[in-house]
Length: 341
View 1 (spheres, one colour):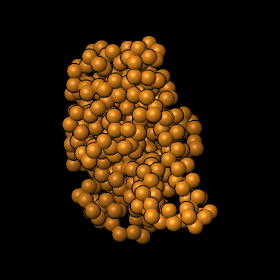
View 2 (cartoon, one colour):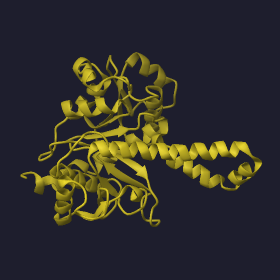
View 3 (cartoon, one colour):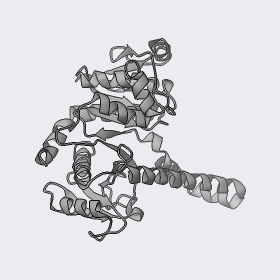
View 4 (cartoon, one colour):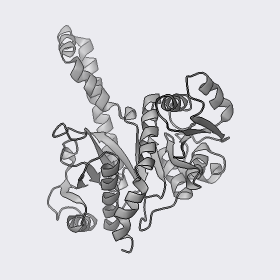
């Protein structure tokens, strides 16, 4: 398998965390990686950590896109030399099997639309994200997939249907869920609730072969095990994702601050130490690794911007798994019946 192209300059902790994550992958697996970025900065970082030199190459890119940069300006002025664009071109031109970046999310979507090719029948790409939920049994994954969480603002019913097909296929290929339960985020379970777009999307998903559609899902059900894949337009998905992150962080902060006030709380926290650790782990979105930007002929996995080395390593492994296990051919097959609509 060709190497995984990694945007070494992206993310809040890049390039240090990215180099350390890729170095760990080189020691633990047979995955080859290309670190894309400023070679003068990357080589010393690489030499300062243990790595397998047979598994890592460096591709120089003289510019980087900051997390706070305006995506359209980055596309306009840095397209030729920025590490994110160089990284995606390695995949688009077939030299690498997949791309990974923890960089600016808006720029990542804009760069993908510039450099990658949409799958037949796909008009809009979707940014996916995993989030923690209460599994209904030991066989159910503790992470669910939501899309779109920011690549679009508004969508029509056809686009939501394609998001559902892509999310279901990703859960089946990558998470090994045989029949992923797919739900449409809405204000109620009634199929007629919501606007014309949501009612039309519900009707189409209900009748679509090959999709295990469980109907509408409400906000308070997101963290239950009712759905493995939740579909929504990007504006709503982005708000929901950030709300979930903030609530999880608030729960951790309240628990920690309360434990500092009285000995009773400290004693209680000592008893519940394992539960508190689990809560912190669930609230740490940056540790999950990446989630895909779906809809392209190429694999592109976006890591959380706050990713540290372990999350970068996990994201690279997800990208390699997607390439090895045939995610793109599976998406192409699943979307084929919709290509002419």
